[in-house]
Length: 122
Image (tube, rainbow, N blue to C red; front, side, top):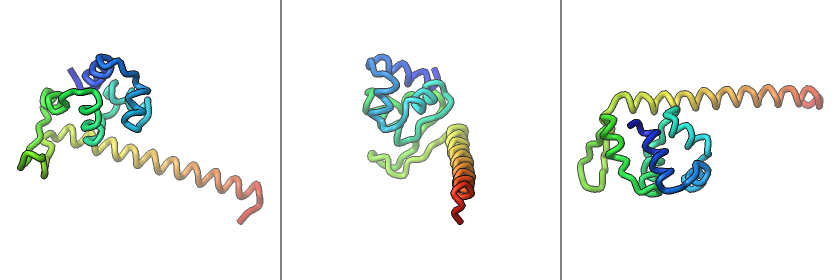
């Protein structure tokens, strides 16, 4: 079972809606929906919060998908992800967010320019 399906199942088992989980995690319902439909992956910070809130073992979920963590001590300092695909997916998500941010900035600049022209402000 992929991570999204496991997340959805765990959330439903706790009788928590996507909206409620999003509020608890300080994110949006759309983000939770994207995670559950495997359109995106939660960051490691969110995975830790999900593990705590839904009382699940995220490491076992990841291990089932071939993702393992190496750590040097019990506190998991110097942890490393051992799955190139997972790292690549996170990188792609980050690059997509940057691309979307740049598009939003460009659109805002156009709007400001248009408003300045309308109000004849330099």
